[in-house]
Structures are given as C-alpha cells and as structure tokens.
Length: 270
Image 1 (cartoon, rainbow, N blue to C red):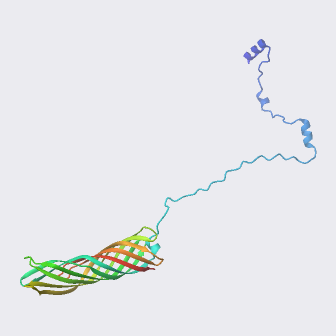
Image 2: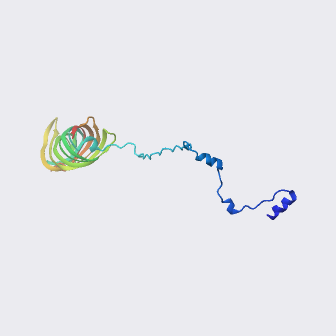
Image 3: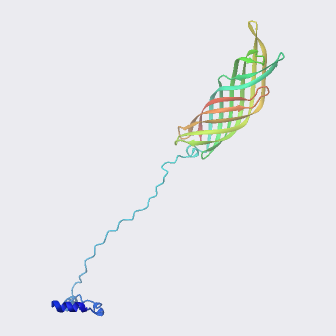
C-alpha cells in the first residue's frame, strides 16, 4: 500500500485503496426503489420463463448373450424314452476251430465261414444320451473248406453249420450330430443256445468217402460290441445301420467263434 501511495504521488493518480472485508460481504441491492414500487402494483403475476430441460439419455438395458449359439437336443429329447427295433443283417468273415479223432489221426483245423444272416428284436430305455437295451437274435452261418487237415497234413474237404439263438443285455452311449442324426456305441453280455454241425469226406481213388460227421449243441455265453448311425426320419420312427461283433464261447469240440455282422433296423420310438 505504501508503494501504491508513492506511485500515486509521482504519477498524479489515485492510489489503491484497501477494501474493508465487512463491506465486501454486504448484499448488493439489485433493484431500485422505483422497480420495487412497480412490482407492488396489482396485476397478473409474470411467471419466469421455464428453464430448458436437458433431455436425459434413455437408460440402456443390459443384454446378456449366451456364448452357446446352438445346443443339440439329447437322444431322449429327440427320440423318446423307449424304442422297439426289429433288425436284419448278414454275417461275414466268421471262424471257429474244430477237432476230432478218426483212424488214430487227430484232425484239428480252422473253419472259415461263408456268408450268413441274422434277425432279431431290440428293446431299449434312454436316459439323456445313455441307453440300456435287451436283444433277442438268431444267427445262421455256414462253413466250408477244402483243406481241413491233421498234424500229418492229410487234407480233407469239410463243411458245417453254426446256429445260435442269443439273448443279450447291455448299455451304450449315443452322440447327437444333428437333430435327426446320431451315432451310437454299445457293449453287451448274455447267453446263447449254440448248435454246430460238421461233415467231412476223404478222397479214395476217384470218389469221396464219408469220413466224419458231428452235431453238438450247448448253452454258451455271448458278448458283443456294436456301433453305427441312427436317423430319425419321422416323429416316432427311426432307422439304424451298424456293425456288430458277436463272440460265442466254446461248444464242446468247437472252440469259441466270432461273427462280424452288418445290420439294418427300423423301429418305433415312444
């Protein structure tokens, strides 16, 4: 303030004056007495213009999107709880080993099967993609060989038949590919009535002489593995095409046998 006073004396200007704090806090009169008198006159009240309202942005709702775009229904959802399916099939590449004694010679060799056939009925219960089933089936297979031999390499032609009537109980799993197409795989165990026949001849001179015949039957155990495709072609009906490996335990002089089967089934779902 002293410096401002000296500068004011030198330049002939008013020095800076200190403003009292209490005076700076006094309210400022915004209207004159004439304006207040005018405002007290009777008349319509003048409402102030409304202030413009800012438009609030609408609240955006939170949308949760699943990362799973498509979920295939389970086999039970698409086909039902139960199924009943008859099937037919053909067998190929089957084999068994048979041995017998004739004229002090022991004959033992492998019998390879020709084309055979099968027919059966399967009933199952589904839980999601799991299944339990029971199967009744009949298999028929013919054997024929021209080189059935013994340990001294004596070769004789031979033929035979294998028949089995089996009951199998098992389970498996199905993998849905689309809403109509699925794959399956099953394992089963059971028992079967197995019957085998054998007939052989020996060449003496220019003609074949009967050498040995056999016919044996017994109750055996069976096991199988199957896999394939199943297609739902209507709401309650589906078709199945698959492969089944059937194994049978030994039947007296006939050792255990294997059958490879291709099967086709058409059944109802409920």
